[in-house]
Image 1 (cartoon, rainbow, N blue to C red):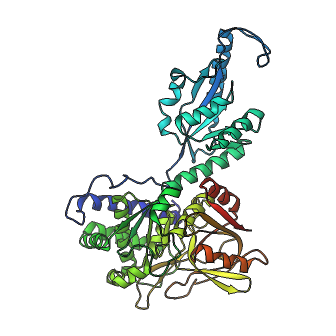
Image 2: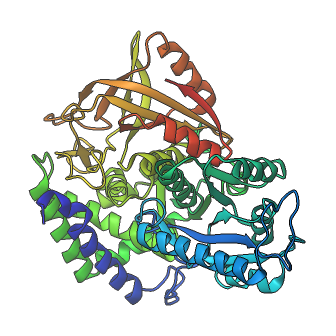
Image 3: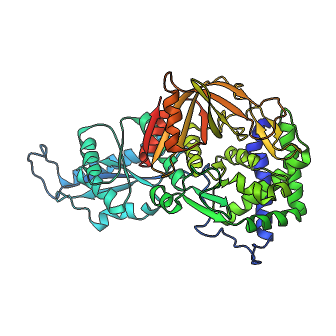
Length: 514
């Protein structure tokens, strides 16, 4: 194994094994034995393992007799027509089995179904049986609409699923226009390449809607400092399907206390710290503080599993004021990096608008993000500055970027990751943020022109990227933040087109500066 892949694989596996053991052997904060399955909605889906589940369906007409007319210019015997439809379905099914649909990493295909009807175009119960038996697993129907147009709409309506069609022929556009006019979703790809892109975005939408955020807080929202976050959690769930699980600091502290007394957990944290320090190009803090940060990471992982979450945030000002961070000698910075290495969204300062933008950027780019405060830097550029990059910014399928370990506070603790953003050939970047009402997405295509924090023993938030918006639009972008809020995440590369399309799939209004 490439040593720079270890943080996403071996280290994660070792920590996960310890988390599973600790979760099964410890009690919950009120003294009860923990449930084997997480509370609430059950185990949250793993974004890295989630696939779009598609049910392929071919429709066909089999007439009850022979005749000719304006829609049937050549008559054939009923049995001959039936045989033709069966051969057509068999060939289509074979092609799907051999060639799939889109990227196999994105899509799981269910067995194809064949729906037949007569010249009355009525879908009967027996005709729908091949679809009904497993359609509950499906996220969408991929329909080959032979025989009629209305059947494709009826299938989507009957099973309450979006329909996916291929080609821009007369029947497909007819179906799509009617389906959309009825307030239902119809997605059309002109060819196989567009189909793969579209299915990938539908998968990204599924991952987004499955986001379940663990948020330890006694204060709740709005936060004391990052007030530009999404603040209405009921509205967030209703609009976007995203849920936030609030837990108390008492529960977080109880988990940290249990881990402090667990020898196996301590050993796993020590081993993880050793490996991280071996991977780092340089470290500016003592190994014991790195192990403390891994203990915090263990606690967060256990609590996420207990509450059925797959994303994380915590408000730094509240955590600091509680004095727990000082007691545990940790800051959340390393947790954010490790979460993103595993393709899970994790944001600074309880900022949910930031977290949702991170989720979207990771899905469409296949890379992790850097995130931070946004401030004007020059007349035509701004900076994003927090000690919250991650190692997979070159791509989840690529070796880790070179990184160093820094200290957050003067006395030497608070593990943070430092990346030299200029140590990468790509200079085009994509920046995004969701507004406080969870209704709009701000998107910027910019140019990375500078970075700082590398090879320096700096404290606090001190990992900086400097980004230049398109010429003449810096002031416009900076003022847009008055509607969207402060924190911004960014990724390498131009993924603005895919990001905007995903936003539209989520019914988010897009404000694009590119």
